Length: 298
Image 1 (spheres, one colour):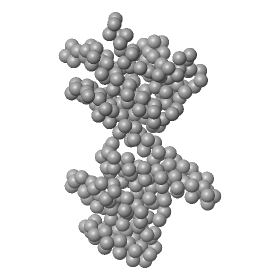
Image 2 (cartoon, helix red, strand yellow):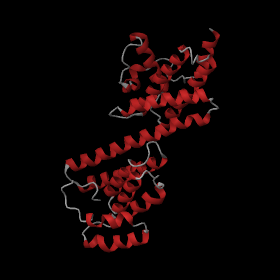
Image 3 (cartoon, rainbow, N blue to C red):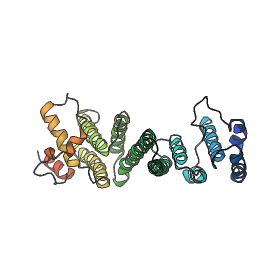
Image 4 (cartoon, rainbow, N blue to C red):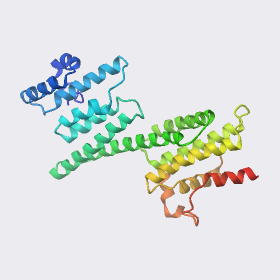
C-alpha cells in the first residue's frame, strides 16, 4: 500500500499526495485508481487506500472525529484484491480510531478475516516457512487484539444491565481502568487473564472502599459491586466455553490463603484449566448473592 513500506523504498504515489489528500470525490478517486494503478504497476485499490490514509492522518492532525467504518474504510478495502493488503489497511485503520470504539472493533474483524485468508493462501502455495510463520503471526496478533477489544467492550457494557448508583458506577469504572492498564502491559492476552484481573481488582476496590472512612462502602454497596463484577466475569465465561470463573476464583483464593496479601498473584492462568486444579464441587457455579447473604448474617 506504500505507507507501510520502508522509508528508503521508492514510492511512486508520493508525488500525488497533495492531490490525494485534498480529493474527496469517490468517483474521481475511483477513476484515478483504475487508470493510474496499471500504469504505475500497482495493484488496483492502492490509490484509493493511499488517499484514505492521507485523509485520516489529516483529520487526526486537526483533531476532527473520524468517519464511521462503513462510510470510509469498508468501501476502500473492497477495492483491494490482495487479502494481505486488506488486512494491513484494516489493522492500520484500527489503530487510528479511539481505543474501545465499535469502529475499531469492526476494523479488527475485517483485518482478522483477511489475515486468515492471506495465511491460507501462503500455506496453499507452499511458500517458504518464514513467510508462513509471518502470516500466522499476523493472524495471531490481530486475533489477540480483536478478542481483547471485544471483551473490553463486553465488560464495560455490564453497567447498562444494572440500576447502579453514581458511586457504584465510579467504583466499577475505576477498577476497569486498573484492569485494562494491567492487561495492556501483558504480552499475551487471554480471557482468563481478564477474569483474573476483574476478580483481583474488584476484591481490592471493594476492600479499600469498605475500609476508607470517607467512602465507607456499606454491605448493600459491597453486594452491588460484587454482583456487577460477577456478571462481567460470567459474560466472559458464557462467551468462552473453556473459561471457568469458579476455577480461577478458587485458584486465587488458595494463593491468598497460602501466601497472604503481600505475595505476587501468579500469572499461571493455564494452571486453572489443569485437571489437578479440579475440586469436588468444580461444576458448582459461583453465586455472588448467596455468598454475600452469609456475610450479612455475621
